[in-house]
Length: 92
Image 1 (cartoon, rainbow, N blue to C red):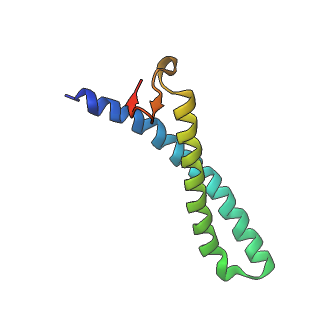
Image 2: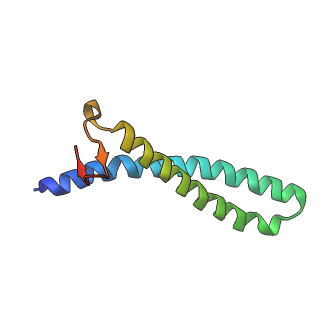
Image 3: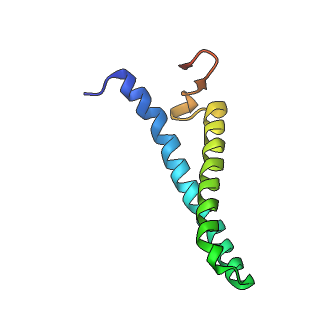
């Protein structure tokens, strides 16, 4: 049986996690592919893998920030009932 605190934690964790993973994979994958194609065409193919990894990490960070910002200001869940208030550190 889940405690109410664990339910709240999972309620916050799940929307953040799936949005970040999906967004990061799509955006990072596209950017990494483009970087690899350009690096190969220009003749710096040895930097393609390193640049692709950097772009994946960068996209993960940017998508995470965007997702957290969106969820904190717009809320989520049924009727957008969950909203994070960092000033009082509670969930409304």
